[in-house]
Each structure stands twice: as C-alpha cells, then as structure tokens.
Length: 168
Image (cartoon, rainbow, N blue to C red; front, side, top):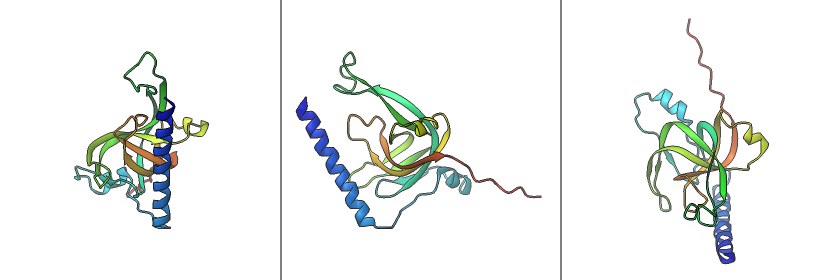
C-alpha cells in the first residue's frame, strides 16, 4: 500500500513540475476562451461549443455542487472498505466539447466537470449558485478524478451576467 502512495506522489510531482514548466514557457501570455453564455448569445445557431485543454486558460459558467464517490483503497471496487470522497463539480447548462491534443482525447457533450480547488468555507458558500470558474482543463487520469474532464481552478466567483441595455 505504501508503494502506491509513493507512486501517486511521484506522478503528482511530475504533473506539478510539468504545469510549472508551462507557466514559465507561457510567460505573461494568457489564452482565454469566451464564457459559454457569451458564445451562445453571439451565435444562437451555433450547435457546438469547443474548448481546448491546458495550457489554454478558460472560463466556465455553471452551478457549483458537491458530489461524493468512492475513494481509496479500491475507488468503488471494494465499497465496504472504500472511503467516501467529496469533491466540487460544476454543472453546465450548455454542454461543451474539448478538442483533443497529444495528451488528451477529444471529448464531446461534457455537462459536469470536477474542480481541483481547496475545500474551504468561501467556496462552500457558493454551492448551489451559478459561478464563473477560471482555470485549465485536462482529461481525467487518476482514480480520484471522478468526471471525464477536470478543471484546475485559478479563480472561482459568483457569476454576474452582463446587464443588457433596454432599447426605447
């Protein structure tokens, strides 16, 4: 069992180093995708919305929720002894698609995305509310990643839609 924890730690360390290397490579350049509602409003007949995986920075809007699933040791294969893990998920009103690259597959029709973010009081207060989440997306790889797509959060805030001007 100890070897599994060491292996996971080494993999996480390499992922963190990889992400840090990307930040250094990008410098101050930020790749940003428009908010889903803005895309839908500008192109009401557009049937599909496409996003890119990291290093692109995206903003996703949806309802924040907390879900639970089986955790270690068996992640559902041994439910009697598996721990229950809680995690944040954003539920999207409009499904999105992700364009594949060398490390991630093309995925269509995503409606739920697990968030990698601290489980703290300020975030908990936003559960059940529409939020805007900024960060980078990657495909689930590990047992503790419960949705097909994961968002590494840079910021999370209550969503405040732009008010439309009334014409007279």
